[in-house]
Image (cartoon, rainbow, N blue to C red; front, side, top):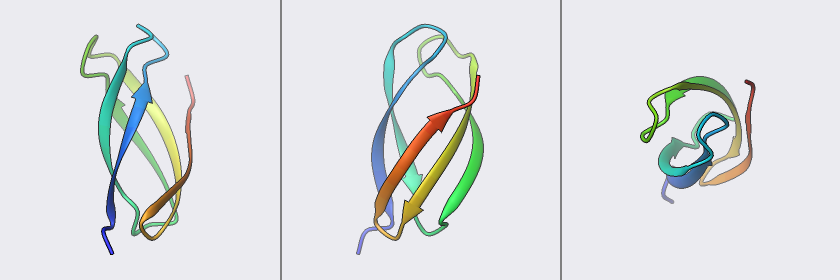
Length: 60
């Protein structure tokens, strides 16, 4: 089973979408990821099951 899963993140600042690799070995994680287009930080909450992303939400 692949624990690292690709996800597309939509930046709340510039509106662009960029790829992010998510480690699904943790059931819930909070992280700050810089947008790869505008470089502004995005606070993300990610809920997972092993090998599957359940929900991604941004808190901005």
